Structure formats: structure tokens, C-alpha cells
Length: 194
Image (tube, rainbow, N blue to C red; front, top):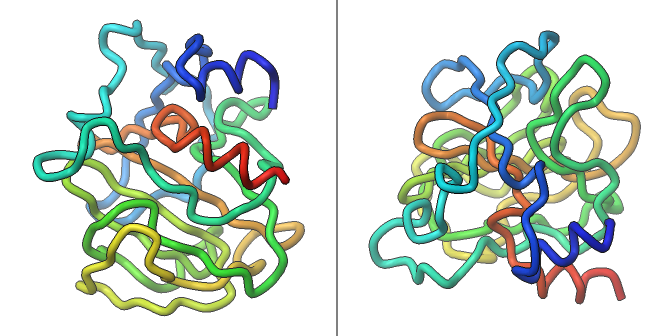
């Protein structure tokens, strides 16, 4: 992670990736495999249109609170462009079988297999969704209510991967992807690096 990225997490600056949203057509409740072949859907928005935490997490969720890290570990691949493709989340290194936890309270919208993602869990929160992909095992089912940091699965290498890791995505209510680092707890990132 760059110094600028770390400062962003701590509230000191805002990176271009943190402002970037990417629109993806999808069936309600079903995400694409996290990549788009074309670049024409990329939408740079000003900081005025960037989502604010209180608007994303909804009523009853502390606006100062951010998403918890679903898994401790280093980021092996960030959010944003990868050549001609767009990576809609972050990849967090993990050993096979590590506990994967819900980033916030919500309801499991999907738990099962998706092409590219392998075993995946999608959780609907008040005004956003989180996706946890490439799991070895899934411990929840569609319709289950989960709490912040509740164990929902075990990390693995299912789907289209080169090694074990967790692919983690955040989507707003319009289906736009959000850089997870823009809404995640930066302090937990620092503690996961030790």
C-alpha cells in the first residue's frame, strides 16, 4: 500500500481509486465475475458525488463506523483497472481455511457457486452489498441474518484463481462497485499487517 493510500484510510487524502465507481449490469442479487472486458463503463465522479458512510450503512448503523475487515491479511490486488479489465474489489491473501467474517450486519442474499467466483456469499446491508468470493466452505445460507464479524465461511481457492485468497467487493444500492478501502476500517488494516 502506498503512503497516499494509507493517508486516505486515515482521512488525510483521497485517492482517485477511492472516488472511482464502476457500473456493472447484473441480475438482482447476482454479481458479474468482477471483471469487465471493455473500459467504456468507467465513471469518474467528483468527491461531491462520492458516497458518504452514513448514507451507505443506513438507519441504526453508526455513521462513523466503517466496514470491518473480513479477513486479516495483506492486499495482494487492489481495486481498479488491470490493463483492459476492471477489478471490482480487493484480494486479501489468506491461507486455505482461514475464517472469513461479515464486514457489517445484514442478510445473506446469496450463498453458493458462481462462475469465476467459485463459492461466494453476498450479504445485503441497509444500503450496500458485500461479496466474499473463492471460499473453500460456506457456513451461511440465503436468508440468514448475520452480525458484524460473524464467521460466514472459510477462505480457499474455488473458482478462477491462482492461489488461496479472499476476493472482497462492495456495491452501492445502484449496483456500482465501490473501492472497499474507501469504506473500510483503516486501523484494522494496520493491525493486520503485524
